[in-house]
Length: 322
Image (cartoon, rainbow, N blue to C red; front, side, top):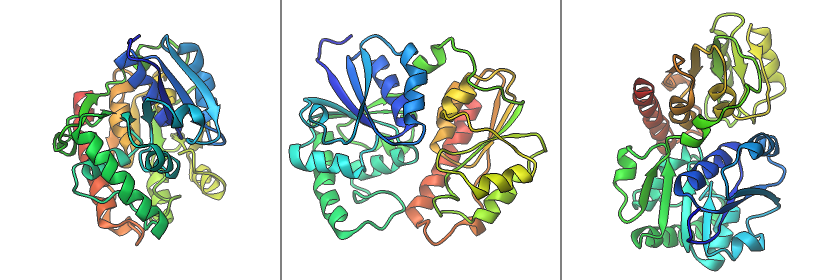
């Protein structure tokens, strides 16, 4: 492990946790990762990962990013730079030495923010005045820290033009070498074909009925892996439409990456495409369906749609390389 000292991480989703461990492994840094309590799948993901963690990496639950260990840390890692809790910490203490890992489609939006092309706010949301004011302060501090070389982005989108436009920030490619190296049994048995669930409908960005028609258009017996925010009646309709709904309680990177006999994964555009292109078993194909214009709701603003279109393009390129 690096002699640079302990880095303290704060993550709020299973994907952020995987990426935090990847960053620690790649950078050979002693890292203690704090996991936000009460987040769906996060504790289960941590329990699955713990026996496989690289040396020097430890996990602990925490109620808030304002936990003293993270707030006072000289070296930090964060999964969601737009988090309200992270904003509060940066506003109070500054940026310091910061590693940022991918948090879904927000990764490319953050790059545009750090480059000064977008204001600091969560993509696709109209934030309250207080959050916008806090965001202006935090955004200015992050941009200044990036220019000074105090921000490192560990990302699956290292080759994206949005990342190349950053001045000062260090860009480290995330090839998921640690996850791919694991010799672990599959957490659940999968058929040859899987539809990867998306949060676009449940979050109100695309028409739910159109999304369900797309999902159930796949052959009967296809497995459906829900996004962790999906549930209830929508999963019942998907099951009635012929899909085999599986809920292993773990992120797709683990479930699909460890699968045996997997041949085909179908999804809508998301950052998961770039991830899966690096972790899918040999021979498995990832097909990404662009979102038709008619599916979008009023909540999906131009920035959000543009970012998803960019993700679709990146997904296509990544699957060709995989």
